Structures are given as structure tokens and as C-alpha cells.
Length: 336
Image 1: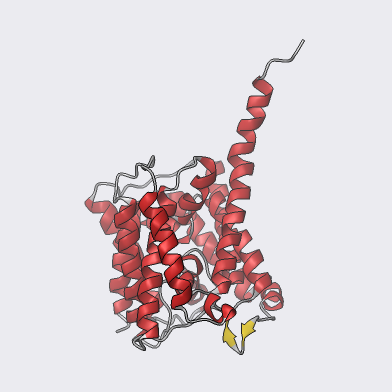
Image 2: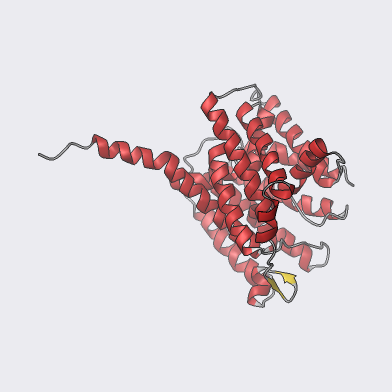
């Protein structure tokens, strides 16, 4: 059953690469280009998983784990991750599938991501993590969800959300984004189904959670640099992810080694470090929180996701929109 993580990882990596799925692109492009294509794929993946996991859990077929709500850690960690993923040019999953395609910058960002995880979890920044995660907000001892926060059955939250998001997706206009891979509809549906499969196969091994990157990546980096590698379901998920992305890129003629310029490499390293700091502090990233955590209506995941988007928008404005506006102002004729 542990090897089922490899199978899910293969499907996940393949789906990420074919759909060009990256939360950084989805969140950032709403602001930069007013295009919501990748955001729609993300929303559909969340919606499919939300309905599926709720059906399985409320029927008693699937136990679920809800991330704890550390409000300060979720807020600050999310903001830091959002800044980092824009600098790195991809979120944790986007960075991983691009490593499978052969992007050197993404590889450096990934290594820096792992270093950031270790520095925050057991290194120089560990006291900050302990301080911000020390206070947990719960509902009668249970991790906070939108359902138990409101004191209602989960379906009373899920159904209105499904109707609203589904209506918006159906009414969405034509896409301006051309990925060369799957459409946003196929990408979102496929990743949502893979997310449900991850919950089921992972729970069968005793790891009661779905897709995530932060914990499994930390396991690999701790094993490589500190010894004592624990090959659990999540560890095999990571192996499968890289392999699936590589096989997808190779089969479609998109696997080739590419090295960006020096300044871009340094930016990738800084971005990767910030992503590692933020993901470890918040207890998850755009996969563990913004995809999997939202499927159980986790308040921690809602706060972290909103914070990630805020950090990504602020950084995108500073890096891309602010210089353009400055140039436009400078180009305006001086009144006489």
C-alpha cells in the first residue's frame, strides 16, 4: 500500500505537466493579465475534491485529518510563501514538474525550498515556528473547519459553495491562456480525481491526508542531509511526481535542459528559500492547504490560501506592474 504513493505521484506529476498546472500562475495572472484560466483549473480541482472527500467522509468510508489553525503562523507563512513563489517563478508543485522538464532554475529553487524547510523546522528559525504555532484555535478540541465554526452539517457549506463555484466556472468566458497541454477543464477534473485517490490510498497506509508537498519534501531533505530516511507513502509520492512529470515531458518532446541567466538563478534560490520558510511555518503550501486542506473546509487552509494570494499579488505588483507604470509616467509629455 505504501507503493500506492508512487502510483498516485506518477499520475499527479503527469497531470501537472500536461496541464501546466501551477498555483503561482493561477493566482498571479488574475492580477497581471486579467486571465483566470489557471485559476479556473485550480477552482475545479478544489471543487471536485471537496465534493468527493465530503461524500466519502460523511458516509464513513474515509477518515479525514484537518490542519490545525495557527492563525499567526498561517497568516505569516502564507504571505511568505506567496512572495517566494512569485520570485521563484512557480509554486512547490509547479517547481517540481518543471524540474521534470529540465529547468535548472526550478531545480535550484527546489533545493532552496528544502533548505528553507530544514532551517524553519529544526534550524535557526525553529524558535519562530514554535512561537507562532504555539497557540491553536479550535472548536471544542477539534481542528477548526467552516462547518464546525458555523455549527452546521458540512453539506450545508459544501452545497452552496459547489453551486456558486460551479456556476462561475460554467459562465466563465473564453480563455486567453494557451498552454499547449490539457485544457483547464481536463486539468482541473483530473487533478481533483487524483486528489481523492490520494486521500483513499494514503489513508489505507495510516497516513490520513491527501496530496501534500511540504511534509514529504521535508522527509526527503531530512533523510539526505540528516540521515534516517523514512520511506512512507508521502516519500513515494514525491518520487512518482518527478517521474510522472519527466515521462510526460519526454513523451511530448518537452524535456530538455535549460539554464537561465545568473540573476534569474539567484532570484530562484531566494524564492525557493522563502517558499520553504513559509510552507513549514504555515504547515503546508498551495497543495497541502490550497488544494487538499480546502477539501475538508479547513479554516487554516482558507487563511493560508488568502495570505498566499495576497503575498503573490503584492510581489507581482512590485516586480511587474510598478515598473511599467513608472515607465508610462516618464513617457508622458511634460505640460508647458
